[in-house]
Amino acid sequence: MANKVDICGINTAEIPKLKAQEIAVLMKRLKTGDEDARQLFLYSNMRLVLSVVKRFATKRDNVDDIFQVGFVGLIKAMENFDENFNVKFSTYAVPMIIGEIRRFLRDNSPVRVSRSLRDTAYRALQARDKLSKGNPNEPNLDEIADEAGLKLREVLNALDAISEPISLFENVYNDSDESVLVMDQIKDVKNSSDEFIEHVALKEALNGLKSREKEILWLRYFLGKTQVEISSQVGISQAQVSRLEKNALEEIKKEFV
Image (tube, rainbow, N blue to C red):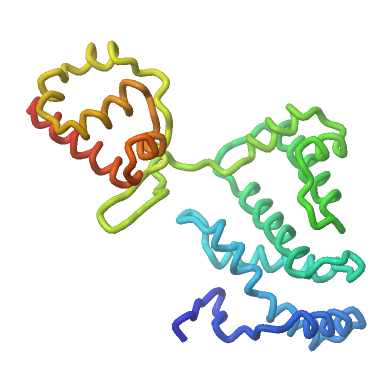
């Protein structure tokens, strides 16, 4: 039971793994109204929902809630699937599950969006759903704009407005005592060398640092590079860049205590 995961009281380790041929047989049976086949089909495909939930679950959202919303997407996929699509059920179902979860997260967003922008976003999303039905490929923004009768710029602005916000302090990497935050990957386009030295008298403190730490601070604060860019240039991991940067800043702080 090492792979056991409990979602909504369901032990996912017990979910049966069916072959493509078995899934096809169940699909034919449930289309004739066989309730047992319907229940077994949904139960055996719950792993599709779980695989998607892992991409969306956050501290703010209840995993069980997201799983249940994704399960609604699975039901819709089952009811609308047609063997004539000539694709595997999983290929057809995953985009529908993702769409259902995205709608749930969008409607529960903590950011207030104007009614006109939200209406425009709904039109774009409805157009996307219409284009996606019976098509395994995700429609691009140009196609969505044409279908909705909107300008591309309107679609971009509306969808961006309802996107889920993310904290600057969100962890993007964590390994024991090392962590990298979103803010660590944002490029600094404001600070120049003159501004940096003018606002913080660092000359002597910088001289007390090791050459690698000096280089990282120069690239990070004087040239405005991200930790990802620095790690590529210097030849070490981003986590190491983060650690060296923090150590160097701590050493500088000591000079002003």
